Amino acid sequence: MQHLKWISSLMKEHRWSYLICLLVLLIEGISSLAIVGLQKWIIDDVFMDGNFDMLMPIIMMFAGVFLCYSLFFILSPYLYFKNGTYLHYKFSRLLMSYLHKIPIKHLQNERTAKFVHYFTNDAVNAAKMIGTDLPIIYQQSIMVIVLMGVIGFINLPMLLFVCLRQLMLSLASSFLESLEQCQERFRIRSQT
Image 1 (spheres, rainbow, N blue to C red):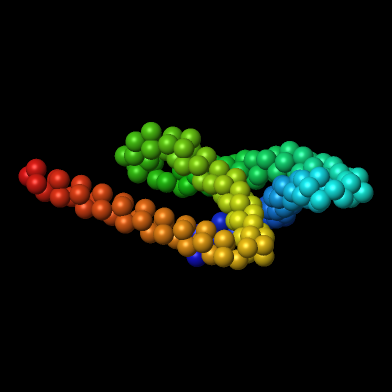
Image 2: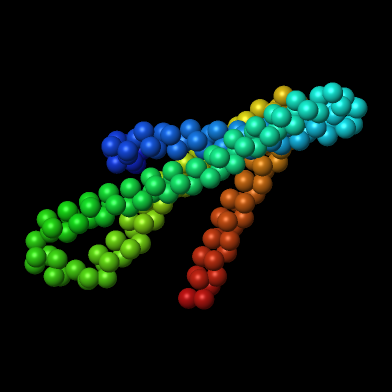
């Protein structure tokens, strides 16, 4: 929870850009799913059922949704990279103000590479995570929820099967990881 407070305090000045980025990513994800849905309608309702009078309205909707998707597909990386760049700038300023406050005696005792690493690696990675990765996680989570709703509406047993299968795979994966760790510890103990 402290991390979220810290992130929100960093984004306070830039929150509208961040919220617009999240909205653009939401529209991009929904329009991406709408393209697939409209393709399904074209194949199932028009070609398979022979309702060719529905072809023109569906194609018009398809063109509109595809245009919307293309626009937001181009706009969203610009926005989240802009947010990431702003955060990198803010992190760099915070680090510089920290460096200016450190007593010279303490600064001379530290390795220069440590501070270079902070600027070139940690600030960049933190800005990328908050500015780019979190909005993409938000978009993918919304898409998963929408897809689960669609699958649950169409075929509830299939949704339950997929969720149960994923749960079993996650449990098996964590069990195998713990088993590998136990084997590694046993191997190390047996060598000593």
